[in-house]
Amino acid sequence: MIDRLATELRLFLLALQFFTRIPITGRLATWVGWNETRMHASARHYPAVGLVVGGVGAGVLWLGQALWPAALAVGLAMAATVWLTGGFHEDGLADTCDGLGGSVSRERALLIMKDSRLGSYGALGLIGVLGLKAASLHALLLSGPGTAMLATLWAHAASRCVPVLLLRALPYAGDVEHAKAKPMAQQVGPAELFGALGWTLGLTLIAGEVLIRLGHTLVPLIGALLGLGLAGLFCLRWFSQRLGGYTGDTLGASQQLSELAALLGWLALSAPRHG
Image (cartoon, rainbow, N blue to C red; front, side, top):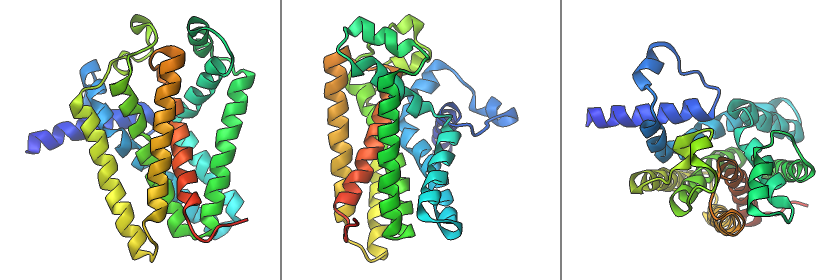
């Protein structure tokens, strides 16, 4: 059991190192180790990485609203999470919008997505998604810091389960030999899928319990789950039809779209509504 827990901790730290700026150095880095097999297996802990990122965002949101107006608190919280991840998922969203925004062939779309320059579709997609997330968090914060923090935590964690689902359901659409991160170009197995789903289910049960203790119903959480599911299905259909699979960029885009959809679903079924 101890060896198993140590293995899972290594995989979690590996995913944390890959997706955030949190340093895993020195003896800890040596203990964690790195190889393609472990990197591939670490997909089961993507929601746990989201929990860390969401925790930072929720903490900044709570501190910010105590010192400044709600709009500033939201801006600082979003800036903190973007800095912590290095804009990893936002970059994927922009590249995906550039590649799939126009009516181009599959081959042309893949070439566009490899271009590091930001195009019109990418800029519009990035501004739109970030703007809607900011508006959603602002509305949630006005309903109470506790629910806004909980929604932030849950949305960041649960949205990172969607890329794992896509890794399981779709083939890699690009050139595996030239993939920037080859472990991301391989479909995950049942262990990774059920691991990510397990994290999401556990965090959902905890979020439900917290909502009840705060005196709320589970309806907002149900709305968030519906939003998450719809976003996942949309991404699955979109990427399958346009590319015949996924790329690293589309995985990042799926996380961003799912996070937004979760917040919108949470807010849609919250009461009272705000103008």
